[in-house]
Amino acid sequence: LREDRGLSLRDAADQLGLTFAKLQKMETGGRFRIDSLNLLGDIADLYVRPRAEVLEAAGIRVLEPHAVAAELDEDAAFASLVLH
Image 1 (cartoon, helix red, strand yellow):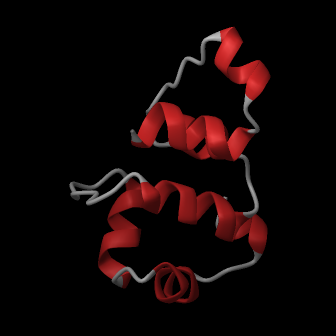
Image 2 (cartoon, rainbow, N blue to C red; image 1 turned 90 degrees about the vertical axis):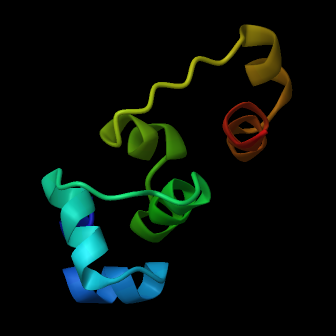
Image 3 (cartoon, rainbow, N blue to C red; image 1 turned 120 degrees about the vertical axis):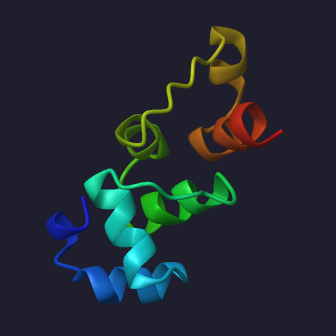
């Protein structure tokens, strides 16, 4: 996703407030600790991708009840179902 946006690993890490090493581990499947799911939202914003796509790439599957999904926009649904 990062390369599709034409960002270097170092530039993306700087914009996300991460170390180069942490972002590299995230991309290569190395061991790392994610402090907040907000980081995945920040990655989605930086890479201009839907949050669901970034969550899926991170191995997180979010199932939305139809009633909630119909009433909320994507960002509100993400915050409601994942962060709270």
